[in-house]
Amino acid sequence: MSNSRSKGMIYDSGHSFNRDHILGLDALRTLAIVGVTLFHIFPDVVKGGYLGVSLFFVLTGYLLAFTSKKEWQAKSFSLVNYYLKRIKRIYPSLLIVIFTTLGIYHFFATDAITGIRAEVISIVLGYNNWWQIAQNADYFTRITNASPFTHLWFMGIELQYYLVWPIIFLVYILIVKIRGKYDDGVIAIALLGIAASILMPLLYHEGADITRLYYGTDTRVYALFFGAAMGLYNKNERNITTRRGGHGIFKCGLFVFLLIGVITAYYLMDGQDAFVYQGGMLLATVGFCVLLSIVADRGMNIGIYLDTAIFRWIGKKSYGIFLWQYPVIYLFNYKGWNKYPLYEVIEIAAIVLLAIWSDAVAKFILKQKLPYIGRRFVIIQCVVFMVITVSGVSLMGYGCEEIVASAFSRDVDTKLQDKLAENKADMQEQNGLSS
Image (cartoon, rainbow, N blue to C red):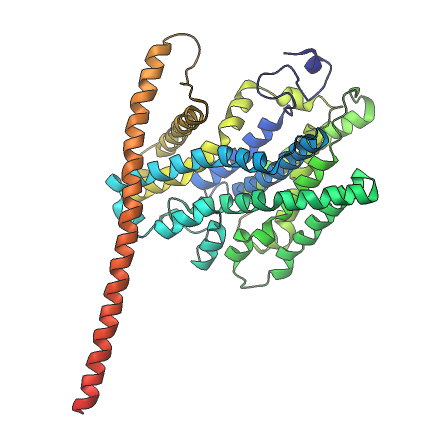
């Protein structure tokens, strides 16, 4: 570890993964993915675990803004490179999960993926949240009434934000150049977030469709804007002394208080309660922003203490863990495997193992390197990986077949319905003539 870490700096220039990696950030990703995972597996116990999604939004907004500003200041920001990075980061794992899931369901739960082509297209093109709104889907319904891809509404909002962020960032740059102050651009983004945050409470009323409020890009984007304002405000100074005395103690106490508050909210904030949409989700999001600001404070040591091996590992695997959750949990419910003892442990193990595999395949596709752990049994590890991957690719092939079959089935059903309607009209006409 570099000397920067020993001096209390959260940006570890000597670490292998990123010169400007924010120490402790993976701990926040862990907090988010644990909440979401427990909500999906124990929805009646961890009723508010869905709030972890808001933390993911804040982190996405923060990191995207922080890296964009850093590249712009270094005169290396490129629109083409920006979109290529997003595509490489998002789509390999996403497509692997989608087609492998369809391949597995081809053998174990064919009926569950009948007519799924439109849903898959909405996921890949980044409008699944609006597609689910149009289908009157309910994120808080029992998982057996959902789809193996219900949770990917989240990716819809993320992809839409990735698409428009360069425009927002351009507005920020123009404001900075016109006004001559970075803070004015930050204030503009923050005001945009505040304006968007009013929309959810404004649209909510008794009997309102909470699915529209929960899935809508317009009602959820404020968390991304809040994160973006924080990322743009981060000045990334190099020489900051560790905060001591009352200020440091206050921030540590606030961090502990907020952490307890998040855990409490995970257990108590039912997603169907009016309070969530009348300001509860906004309050939780503000709490996440404060948590992030404390962790990212280079004058505090909290980020260093949170930068443990387990948090780094979970944080880096959080994307794959998220993607695999509903495919695994839905299959267990569909097949009735959730009646067996300790099935939750098996679900979690399956999700984690699949996340490790899909992440390794994605890296192999992008970097052409075989993954292995440690320096022992490297050849055996690589052989096992290749065998599993070949099997996975075969399943992906069946997944592609399901997409084609789904389209054919839909066309046949449409033609059949048209023919039945035509026959019905002919019969009514004949009956009219005979009478």
